Amino acid sequence: MATIFSRIVAGEILSYKVAENERYYAFLDINPLAKGHTLVIPKQEVDYFYDLDDDTLEGMILFAKQVAQKIKAFSGCKKVATVVLGLEVPHAHIHLIPMNSEKDVDFTREKLVLTPEEFSEIASALRG
Ligand code: 5GP
Image 1 (cartoon, rainbow, N blue to C red):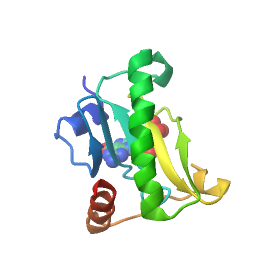
Image 2: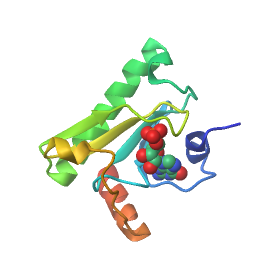
Image 3: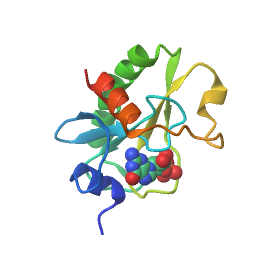
Image 4: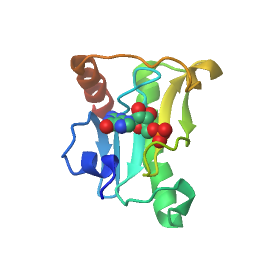
């Protein structure tokens, strides 16, 4: 069965797209730690990040770099944290999170609740 992230790429489940090419897809995390919190995934369905083949892994980091540059410009944060963690969705993903302090990347913190309009505005700004 396709993962929820593959269904997002296929357009079966709505997402707020930030960037896409033939191999990768970036979209806003629906439970963000900060405005601009983005997930980067390979279109290839592989569960564990380090099971990705070298070429896919390398390309994913370069794709994430482009997205991170946009997040940094959008949010004005000091750095964009690059985090690979989580067991919830069995599809490799990188969390890109605007960061001004290490506390900003504490996944036990309460997540932001944004309206669809806010998500759309953020995604549109990051795509621009
Ligand atoms: P993890 O595997 O990293 O623990 O969790 C996956 C991440 O994907 C979580 O941060 C969660 O908020 C996010 N997520 C799970 N399902 C969806 C979804 O349907 N849409 C979006 N945009 N994000 C999701």
